[in-house]
Image 1: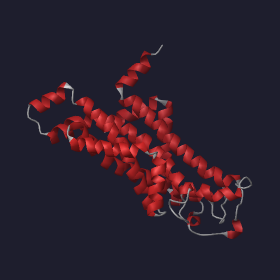
Image 2 (image 1 turned 45 degrees about the vertical axis):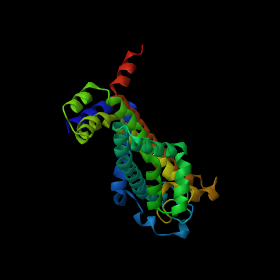
Image 3 (image 1 turned 120 degrees about the vertical axis):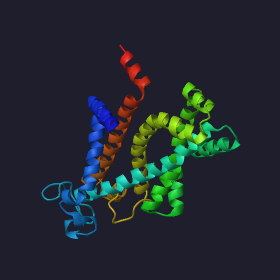
Image 4 (image 1 turned 90 degrees about the vertical axis):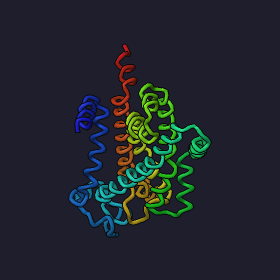
Length: 287
């Protein structure tokens, strides 16, 4: 609890980071209370052809889409899909990438080299290209998008944790623990992992925004959640044929993606400044 309060207090001192925190908090609250905030919660699934492409105003704050559904209501429920994609994809990437990075960084043998070469192969191909290939192969669905993002993002955690682990092996407290007979499991879990937690947290925050943006790209290409699910990228894709007349159709989900990704990036930058003392010292040293 004290650590959480410390982070929150430091975030409040950084305006941009605190803004990012508020944006993400707003996203979570919108997802939780979507049934109560949405003026037309049934429009997530129901169709109203008579209300087709109505501009913003009156009962429809952000207008309606090609099926006559309220865009504002669909955006609120789409926040749930966005959170699920980001949390699950990044969470699975953490579960895969962090243990591999710890083991490859601690041990020096052919197996650890093999693990890093595999991660290098994944990193050699742009994530969006590889994710499109995997999602296209598996077929368009929300689960397949999450799987594609997880399989393409874990090497970033592996490379980060590997580098941090290798640098920690030269520290005195690690060498002392090994000399005192501590098992590799104890050294990795109780000595190395807590010291690499800070960069992992920063990478997780920034990775959430990047993963959500990539998921929106897959949805735009028709590889994500299928209609009538209110996925933001899919909503932008459906609006193309009605531009520029129905400008609100693309603007609303586009701004939602922009705000959420910016929120995670601002929070990630703030956490990096808070958790990395070297960056804080260098920033204070500037004239």
